[in-house]
Amino acid sequence: MISRIAVALSGIALIVVLFVPLWRIDLIAPQYPEGLFLLIHSNKLSGNVDIINGLNHYIGMKTLHSGDFVEFKVLPFIIGFFSLLFIAVAIIGKRKFLNIAFLLFLVFGIIAMVDFWNWEFNYGHHLDPDAAIKVPGMSYQPPFIGFKQLLNFSAYSYPSIGGWIFLGVGAVVLGCVVLEWYSNRKRRLIRKTALAGIILLAISLGSCSRSAQPINVGVDDCSSCKMTISDEKYGAEIRNGQQISFTVNGSEKTFTATVLATATEIGQDTRSLMVRAIVQNNDPALIPGTFANVQMILGKNPKAIMIPNSSVIPQGRKKQVFVFKDSKALAMDITTGVRDSANVQVLAGLAAGDTLITSGLLFLRPGADVKISKPDKGG
Image 1 (cartoon, rainbow, N blue to C red):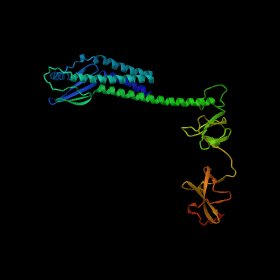
Image 2: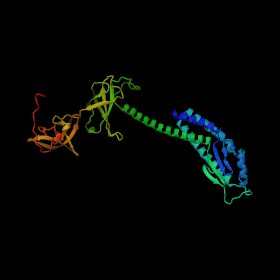
Image 3: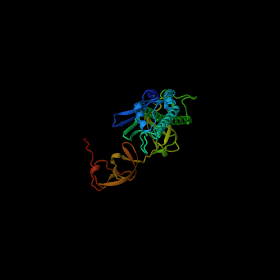
Image 4: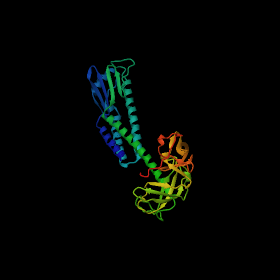
């Protein structure tokens, strides 16, 4: 929408170009301290044309007359064409037509600048051999843009109001082309993602109805809801048919689901293993698109040794705990496994029956004497 408005305003701005000068050439010399200027419009020349022609006569340059330039006859129609073209592109709103319009405008701008330079070249080099003033090897081509010294005249050439409008229109339309390209690229990415989701939904088992019907997210009541979870770390331990439990925001209930399928590989972008589970529940708290906190029991080990997280002391890349043995504090290197918010599993380094020291760890050193005191029953 922003691009269409900007393109339409660009078309309207080109109409203004028909009524203001496109280019300006200033000439400053000691005998003309107030300066002379030449204004180039889309259909005529204006400014101190007669004075400049009188000066040019002495050095053999051609006199300037608006009727001698075929460009002044066609340029207003070209500008009008691009004005209508940009307005039409804004109304149609097609990216393809915007690109074509910008390319045409760019080509026209290049051709116009080449034609302007060629006119200046002919104007400054093709001199009358019978001129009153002759300077061997001297040419009087005005600068294309910027400054140039021509005898005792300082010449300056630069865009006027219409020229700046032309440049501004080109910059705005180019910005619209880039913006539309980026937006189209983003829409294509969204469509690809949506298509992948549709295909995944089509091959999934189960359906909310017996016939193919569109799903209204957050509205349809599905007694069989599919949920997707991801986990790379324990991917090898997840099996189809496993039971999981989960909670969702806005509900204190704990729901159960069954693993339906797992992906064949780790996602390259997310580095996660996608797992599809299905829950048989029509609770209103289960809204499509809701995030869930999932708990999955991967296995049971009645012989597992679990110790408090606070009793583990990091030592570089190692982990140690203190055990009580023969009234001494012994440092033991351990290997840990799974953990939760309070406890961590010990895979190696401890045995059942070891006495673990869990308090006063900051004051312990390996081999330090330790005395176990019984807690005060009085509190």
